[in-house]
Length: 330
Image 1 (cartoon, rainbow, N blue to C red):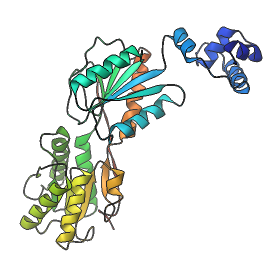
Image 2 (image 1 turned 90 degrees about the horizontal axis):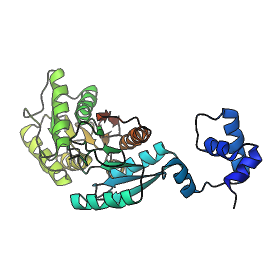
Image 3 (image 1 turned 120 degrees about the horizontal axis):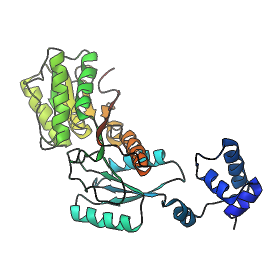
Image 4 (image 1 turned 180 degrees about the vertical axis):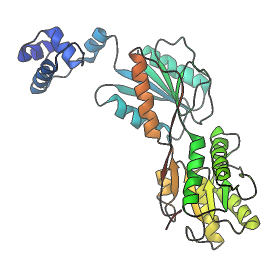
């Protein structure tokens, strides 16, 4: 087995210098670092993780506890976090708490026993959640769902901006008679997206058809029912902003049933940019992406900073992104 001493001998440096170079310590000259790395590559050296953790006081692992049962949010977040941590530098241990606080505490205990260096907690919805407290031995970053403690670091998506972004796109497409078919009113994401949309319409001197958004559920059935109700009262509708892609899929069905062409007669915009739904829609669905991988990347960066003694506090919002497809413009 190739050892660190072998690498040091090949590079012509001491073992301690080789160790510092391979661990990117700043007190090593770049020329020395390059020489040590070249020697390690030549010898196909694989660091001993146990020995490395004993020397550095870190295990090179972080935990990610999710409450997202379907993986719609946690998987993109995980991918973004792994990208930010870097290949072969930090391993992410994923645990599913299934929306259960007791299960969350169990996973937390297991991760602590594994001596993780830090923790990312992903919520199932964007509403504020209770903090795990300030007594944990490792730093924690909350992603998607913010902590209720302003001392914690939370990374979220800007749902108010997302609603405004959808309206801006519909206005740019020449739509002025816009219905807002929102999701479940008990979810902060539904009310915040609707709030942003109504505010942007007001800036343009407009209001939603019917005077206000209509709330229902996060389902295609509600999208169909809500759109049929809008068409019955407001046949002049020329734009529909939906609280989710599932709702938007239902809206497309209802408009098709009513003989309305999309996007020639009515433009439709969804939210979440869930690939399996937006690309399989007829026509493909314009949607607002929460940039979940960016949330994961930013959460990982903030966690790394905290592990280095530079913690962040409060809530930081990632700006959403509009992905234009055939349901809103020809």
